[in-house]
Image (spheres, one colour):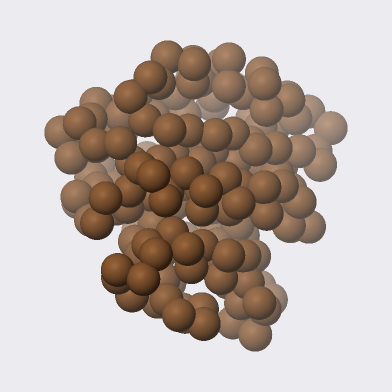
Length: 187
């Protein structure tokens, strides 16, 4: 059973499909996280960088998940906004060991939060401070400070330290998203 199976409560029984946007800079670990969230029989062994975007569809016992894995390469980031309107939750992945690009991640997050299709919605945002296994990684608290997450007042958000390769921290994030989404996502 994959971690997204745990999100089956996300929509109650009202809908059969949930749309989750997975965003972040290139090489932050988005595809690896999505792979770990899938049911074990659907997981890939070899992860390659996403070019453009991929759409992953898979089923849990009662729901069908559509996860949009958006490339974080600069030339593709303008594509993200085409999927905001249909997103019911956002997973934003940060490479916690890449201090040099933390400013770029903050700029992309600010652009996301100010987009008309996101700005006035109480869409939950789950942040993964990923690659915590690397020696240069900063703590999730430090990532939160660098991204000024405390300034997000109009949306529920949560940050988790994670190591996508081992799957560490992913369950905490999914549990938070499931619990928060009951009260914040109106579908």
